[in-house]
View 1: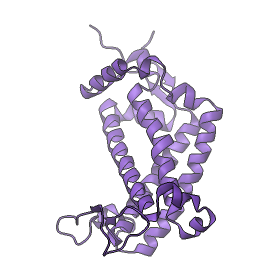
View 2: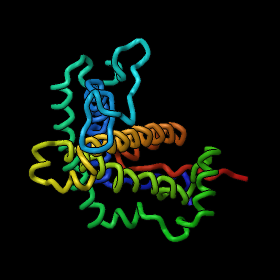
View 3: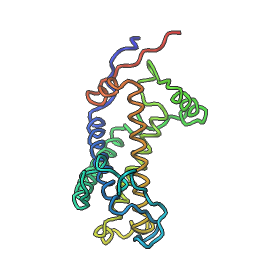
View 4: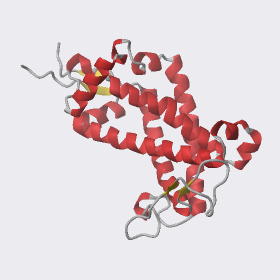
Amino acid sequence: MDHAALIYRTRLPVRIWHWLNALSVFVMLMSGMMILNAHPWLYWGKFGANPDHAWLEIPNFPGSDVPFPPLLTIPSRYDLAAARQWHFFFAWVLAASLVAFLVYAVTSRHLVRDLWLRREERSPGHLWRDIKAHAALRFPTGDAARAYNPLQKLAYLGVLLVLLPLVVLTGLTMSPALNAAFPVLLDLFGGRQSARSIHFLCASGLALFIAAHLAMVLLAGPLNELRSMVTGWYRLPMEKRP
């Protein structure tokens, strides 16, 4: 077998969703940081205002009077109204693309075939070996590189089935208009301020995932990984000779 052969690994719907999702999440994170600059305190329950007890107060960036400097925010100047417009527009883009991709993932069996862990991959021993291999920067080669490894699958499933749906639902819960139409959301998350806190935690989880994802792409070979997400074609890393 030619271990340096190109294989078609990433289908077109996956690539389209990847880039659309990346754009939406980046814009929402940056506009969300501008929104947090307006009130950088987080609460649990139904109420949250300056006199209330906050479980988290986000500290100001060194040398700044806000937590997030202009380099990280959309817009780059303080403008809460504009930040909300950016945030809400891409929130609907994110929600629509997530629903469409979940429908595709289920109907095409992408979810079961490519992302769901096989029985042997769910064993603690297998997962521990995969963790140690990643920690030692030993990445799959040859046939093993044709599919996602267990840690990749867990990370993608966590984003697809937990973090993104929670971001969307908690975002909806913070809308007074949608609260009136769907009051069950307030009961589900324990109030608008609790939803805001969960929204922040999930957004932080997405930011950590992005950082780890980009680091792994750089370490595994950025050109090969980028080609896979642009064209679908991926060159299998060659197995090391003993």
